[in-house]
Image (cartoon, rainbow, N blue to C red; front, side, top):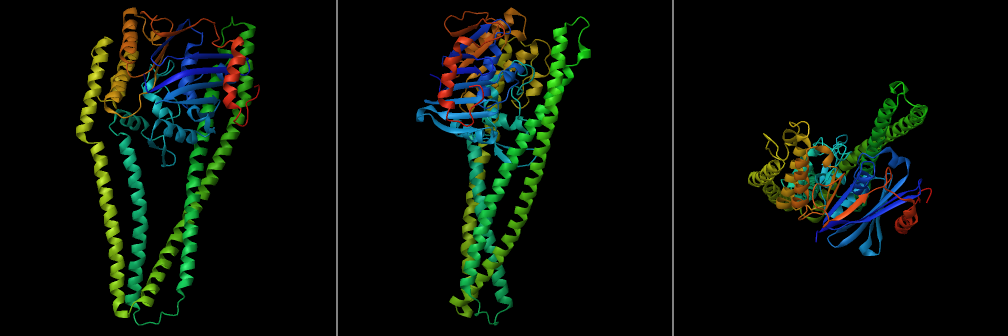
Length: 553
């Protein structure tokens, strides 16, 4: 039994009043049927519902779809429900407890990270802030999309371009070059850095206090109220903590707003592209009146939508500017407060020493306290060095070479099986060199060979969970029946030993009776009117706990 596998899917069109459901096998699932019978829509909906963004048909959006999948993860069942940008996750093994329901992708990413034990942090280009990677970064090696996945490796999902060096970081994480332990150690080092900054601040205050004592020895300093300084210091500490929380909130809000703004910008570009495509002048002279009306109608809708999108984008731009201003103000206030805090700590330390020690013992007391702090700092530095060493061991050259050699071995095998002539064999991070050189029908074969090598390297060398492998329409990529059979054989026989396999095609050039199959027969519609009530009830059992309930339910 596979440790992670899709159990079922439910699709619901609120506008068309149609539904669809399917129970998956934990092992091999083959979906077949003529073109335009909904195979790709079903395939796309799986990881889309789990939080990744794929290229959807406009009909999906127009028909107001809700999708639900149940996935088993190491013995626990989770339900994911998606309606437009809102994603809701429930733990079915804990009385259907709602874990999250949000349109904010960062919130979804944190919950997905907890469920799958996925701790990859990526740097956001616009802010330089390191944040939990979006779910698509976890699913990427396990999905080949019909539209983009066969032409370019790592392009099956949208929305990852917001991260710096995302391709290299994701590949290093998945292959084990930088494993999960690396990022766990990275988090522990960050905590040590925080403690070091705090202790060094105290040490700096003590050093300043000692310097003032030595320069002013003999002055009458006993009339200062130490209790006053203690109250003042406590006030500074409380304000400093509040400012830190405020800065964190502003940073989180900034990331979320930037994400929303980028989504709107993407929608604008897509709408402009559609507007350019819906040009009445581009129609053939023999085009019917219905065709011309449809183009004009689409133009009218797009011309209404695009200005609204620009208004939304302008609002997000203004929100981003406001948040950045608030963040800057908070940082400046925090800096001033730290200076005041260090000064007060120094003055208070000086008064405590003078009140509790004879003058000839003062310098000894200073040294004693500073030595204690120095020792504590040294211990933390040693601990940090040990963690840094462990991190370097995680990414040692020997380990990297072993992983790269394993990848190349699997890549050569797949290239031979798929009869790729004069293939390029390089490390996993050189995916462009491996796949982009090929043209015509050889290009998709190179993409599949790359994915095969990547998945087997993950299996052999990484601690990443083995997710379901989902492949869309491999037969359409190569007209040669002999090659097509080799593609199916490689997927079915070699990728399903540790992963659930879900694959769709017009047909399969091999025996499929022993596998779980689905034959899509309804032209232009996977969904059926007679299943609407059943699927609606299945989804709404969970969805009724979410506000707001979608229209037309």
